[in-house]
Image (cartoon, rainbow, N blue to C red; front, side, top):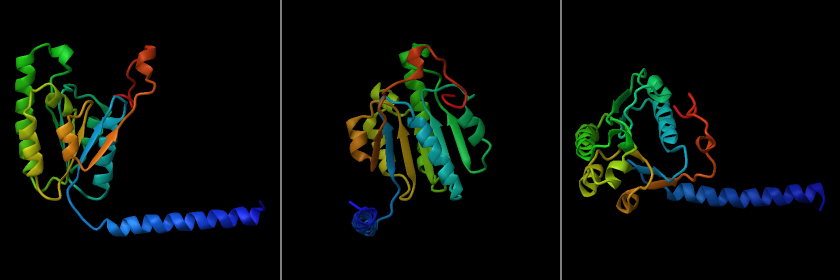
Length: 201
């Protein structure tokens, strides 16, 4: 095959691809607030959600963050985003369950945190809400899944919500518009490497 023939074949292939993509874009004519779920055992679920905060702020949107489970307030993302004018940030957890070791207290903490989230979900000025590690209180039964789904369904029409965490319940996945599953192929921690600033914290 000559270079000219190869170039012509590539042009034809890309033209067909463009037609398919353009047709799909034309069909996507609806607007709504999206419910996204970032789940799976791999690293990057929260990091991806926090990246969406930067994207939203670039469009002048207002963002709310509610962090379940995690009790620390020294992460790089919080240090940066708390300084942004259009971000409200809530740390609602007290640490991982193996740290607290108290079922009643973990349940109470989660329910108190959800009361804060309910206020956020009623606030039409918040364009994007990140519910970081919410899957764990749902999985452990600290929060009632049907009540959480009801609150999510009744939020403002154009409010976007991103939920992160492993083991997303089936009913949550069914309600979601977009689901991304992160795969764990290799992780530095298993080689004895500490969590690193700017990468893990």
